[in-house]
Length: 256
Image 1 (cartoon, rainbow, N blue to C red):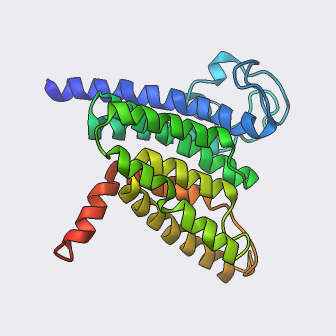
Image 2: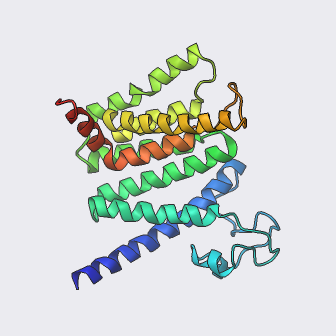
Image 3: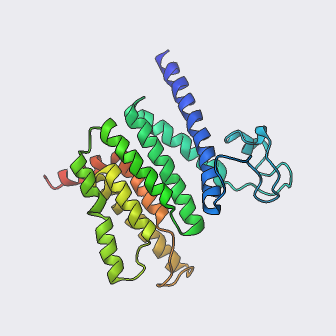
């Protein structure tokens, strides 16, 4: 009986998450185009027709429509159900790790911002300042709602990675974008310096592997650029949940 109760709770949490994920799709599309996110009905980006309510049910509508617009028949990008699913997954993991707490809500909100950052950066190679502000606001909320990490760790986190990135960018021009640097500063305040370093390391490993692939496949040359934001977002999302655990496990392997 208890398992059934938990199953129902997690089902509602997942539904909540995919609904928020559906809104993230709106943010990802509209913010770079400077379209008001609070006004106007959703529409097909191909034919411009206003979508019906039954076309906007997260995940379900994509399956019912078989991945095509009801009006023009053009394929609907699989990104839409992917982002919705990421929202659902973030909600479930947040509740599993921290239960029904403010900590879980802040973590889920941070994951939503990071998902938005990742896909906007893929599309535009830019990270809107509004995303950095959102992470800072969540960091301020976390100072009062989440006891760890301590405020000192959060303040150190602001400069722990962003300042070295600035210095490296001065030495090697365009090695990092301004959005990436500000993202690390904002995430440092939210996560604290230990988890930030773990997240950055994960991002560098992931970005390095992707960069090698681009060079090997000749899709980019040595002077080419690619969006690093998605790797930072993924790394910070992992660090959000297990960053400190990875940090102490690494030190423990050396007996520290």
